[in-house]
Image (tube, rainbow over all chains, first blue to last red; front, top):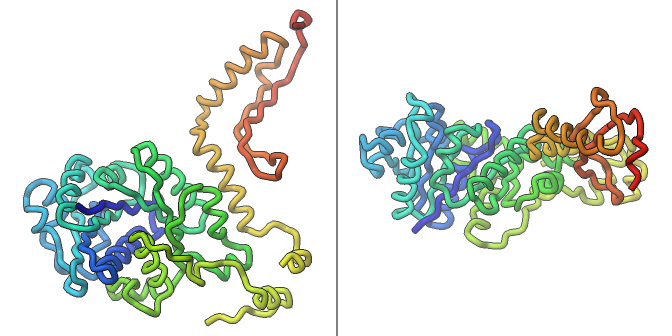
Length: 270
Length: 93
């Protein structure tokens, strides 16, 4: 019996889909888990594109929910990663095409066959959000170090608690250590302080995410990507390993760095 | 570390501004402080205080905000400004 994890945020554009793609691929690639990624963003599907599977869609979530096909028929097998599957959203319908009850049923069915069911939640707190959390056992909240994103994350924490979720976990995405050093970006402690929920991981801003999305290949499989490294660590933490925050995740400037800043010298960048 | 901090300019960085704004926003969001909610509190405050003193009902100001506590931590605060017209003599107890 597997576990259903919903990846949500409230605000759009903070990295829910990227996170879903990378965690899903990470579980399959590094932990040999059977994983299905479910795109719940009906009408604005994107997980298929991020995964590079957009040309292989036949049936979708709405078809499966309404019995037009069997759930298994709607699954797309990722040929690059063994045990990785995608259940794509419909592009032509809207969020009301599926009900929370139907979502619950599909999740129950997928749990039988997979270790992880990762749900990519749409932005917002309306029907799409309610659908996405309906069948989930746990929740991961993604935010970025911006006032608007953290505010929305806090709203989501409240809504998840009201829906009976215990202890949602936080991923802070697109962190820029250089800006934090200058005092121009909230650091990890600031956000944990404000939101008062457990931290699951910190993903640094990384050009490789754009490049990997261009290609449709998740960055988690790229050994040289810093964001990919952060996602690999998150996968291990979700598997119960105790993994400390990686260097890129740490934001405290070293002594030499301070000295450079003090004398107005530019910090060297890799 | 503190040595360097000592020489740094004291004006608050933009991240401090962000955190402060965020904390205030969340006080409102979490309290679900709708105008109706604040009106309700205001009405009950007026009723209660009117037992002891005559107050200017039009001049009452009530808002949800944050203030610094004794140990320099920002905490949410309900601030009410209630102008008193006259203290009732009968309110001795």
